[in-house]
Amino acid sequence: MRFGVPVIICLSCQEQVAQLKEPFSAILVGVTKPLPVTEKRLMIRSMDHAPATTDAPQTFLQCLGYFLTPQVCKQAQKATPRRRAWRWQTQPLLFVLLTMTWCAGDSLPERFETARAFYVALHQRRRRPGRTFAGFAKALGKLPVRVLRAVAAALRGRLAQVFARRFWVDGFIPLGCDGSRLACPRSRELERRLGLGQRKKRRPRPKKVAPARPPVPQGQDPAGTRAAKPRAASAPQVWVTAVMHLGLGVLWSWRLGTGNADEREHLRHLVNTLPRGTLLVADAGYVGYELLNRLQAAG
Image (cartoon, rainbow, N blue to C red; front, side, top):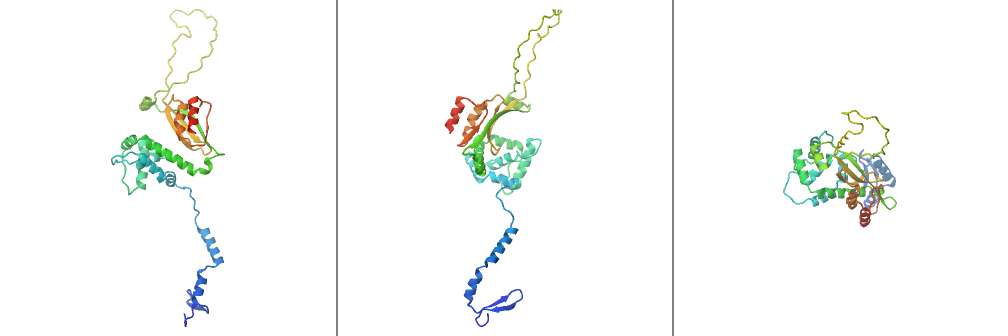
């Protein structure tokens, strides 16, 4: 500034460019307003170099956090009864349990080691859970079933939020239900809990009239008079009745039972998990007054 008159100086070459004749306040107001062409060019450059952002999760950890929101954990904690400070708290117990479904291993202890190491690596500042699979199984056995049901209900609500655009079809929620029988390994515990399955009996065929035969020598059994061998029991079986969203192909709810369970009874227990506005699709086996009355009462 020379003799009270503002002067523009080039910062790169430190030379005087021009001498201003207007007051400094007016020039300051003009400079603070960017030129429209310059602003447009800067926006184009910033958009070109900016990374593409998306709300969809990209990694396994992001997927877990996308569905296992703090609200889901809060409902699980609310359903957990007050107890003493155990080595296995509710949050690490459920986290390791869910992570074991994606772990590879020939046995449950191997999957447990991988899932526990994954949890410890993510939560290094928190108290570490137990180290043995026996302690994990014991803690899981003491966990009330209502906690798992609370987590399942919270996850179903989260699924309805994530897939809200495809959840409804023409004013209905299309859900399909069906049951299937699965064979299980022949272990003593499964045989004790599930029992041995029975093979399907073949329908008796009409007997054909056989022609007359010569007498059978003494000491030999005639044909057809031998004692029938008892049918060997099949492997233990479990009956699975599942409900899934027909448009998304996502499992919604399920119920397990022994091999001789009634799938209609399973569906009566699963009615509480069906949201309002459900269009239930099932085969002709799901009939009966009690089942239809239960569905009608649920709305």
